[in-house]
Image (cartoon, rainbow, N blue to C red):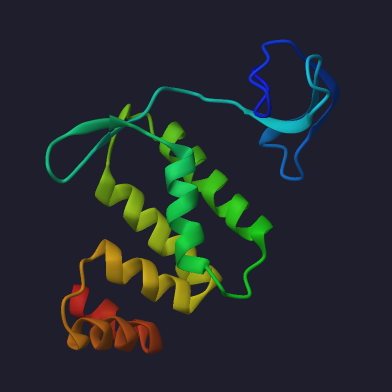
Length: 158
């Protein structure tokens, strides 16, 4: 593992333990060159996932990109970071266990929206406004109406 401080190639693991939700291994490392200490995380990857974008492009799935987009949605909201980590880990597990090696960006977005809906309404609206490309105030109104009365959406869908 390369040291993030000096770029040294020789690092040593000082401590390993599972994360709270047992989805990763947390390793404390020390650089033999500069003495810097840092943490790495090791996760199980069941299969290599590809994301099919709306444009038709295929890109490798990036857990960190998913995490960043969720963190942007919850920025300055009173949301426990552990909840976010569990939500993202759950989404990744769902995607990996789906049996598909190619996942649409829409599927990922829907999983994120469903997860955020249960965590924080404001974060849900923020994410939805970007994901669904809101252009006018009425787009927000429709989403807020759906949030305040989930039965009305069920009636529209039937």
